[in-house]
Image 1 (spheres, rainbow, N blue to C red):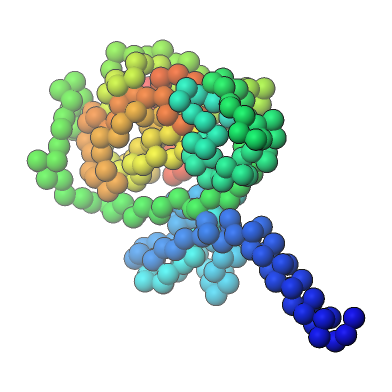
Image 2 (tube, helix red, strand yellow; image 1 turned 120 degrees about the vertical axis):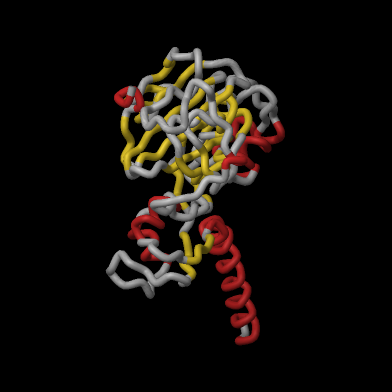
Length: 294
């Protein structure tokens, strides 16, 4: 083999290696997003709201110092979130293409993890498939909630049984108190997991009410983590509430909401086996049992 052929072969091998590297790392690279730091932000606060660790945030931004504070106006790279492998039960109306889109995979990646469905074989309702570990984009970082806020009367819809002046916790679904899954350890499809909330059974379309007054941090579909359509609210005293598996969201991110105001409707979206509300409560993002508040 002469020098020309050896050089040509080396160039081709380098190109192939680069393509392989790009295909392997591309998911993580594409999952990275950016965030412009606001006044009062801290690295730990940004990390919590983005769903990543401070160490991951520093690794994606090597110029950051060890301090928790960061200058307002700076643009940070938010690394992708690595989600662990899990199992998923197929629901009515779903196929592998739909499921792949919901969990942040390509159809090829999902079929590779479930070779029994290679070649276009159909997947049946109730079948349990493997969802491999994957990297998805960081959660959108919602703006921090200030200590005071002005609420325009036109934006307030008050449930007559839940006066806005009350600071007590309101049960999120009127007339429905059956809890099908408690807070704590449970087994789903043979896998033990921690359930950071309670599941309240109610018919699809039943109104879900804000348990406390506050500001909407998130109002979006979150199928990556199995929540389906979800609303997350932040309250003035450090409490945070989550309302998940909704069939409809009735509030928008940043909206000020009063206690008793409808924020969504009960549904069966995301990782769910029937119509219900997943109701989660957190104190400064530390999970707490909702039933301990009533």
